[in-house]
Length: 217
Image (cartoon, rainbow, N blue to C red; front, side):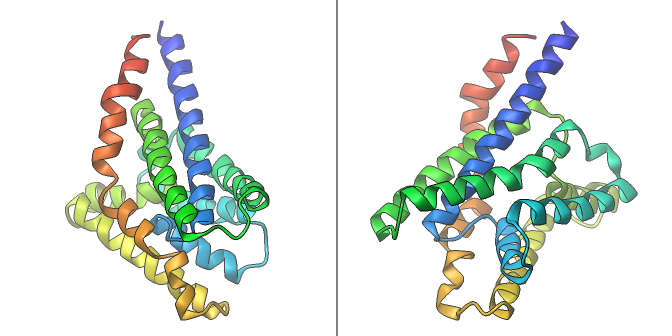
């Protein structure tokens, strides 16, 4: 039975990461702002001339090293699923959607943003309920809060999110981006994902993810 539960948890982690990756691709099509870490990645992507998927792996490998040095118990199977898959699936999703949704109107962009928010909350619920490790970025705030005892998680997370957004914007501008285009990587979507996703994730936790996992326990 324990083996069956573990297989179920791994499957949920994999599904959660895939769904979240697809949602990031949709956020990028909406161009109304992405989540704080992806804001940083967007700026970095504009600066460094390699594929987004590869850049995501390299960046998260560096963050993984940080977590392994200071508190590796946050690292699990899901951490590596996220590290190796999310960037490439996001890249594929975004490139494919660009061929389907060409020059989207503001209405289409808003619809994509709403769809992206719902999907990322759904995927996050599966990923979190599986409880097989956190992303390397999530591990940073947890280590600062729980290992170094430097503050409450919610405040530490707000600070790390703000740092990511600021770095993303700075890198975007240094790469030649215009000020008027900043809202495409740090906009309303960034605010929504940073402050308002919790209730939606909990809804999917309670009504979808936990019941699915409980069926096998």
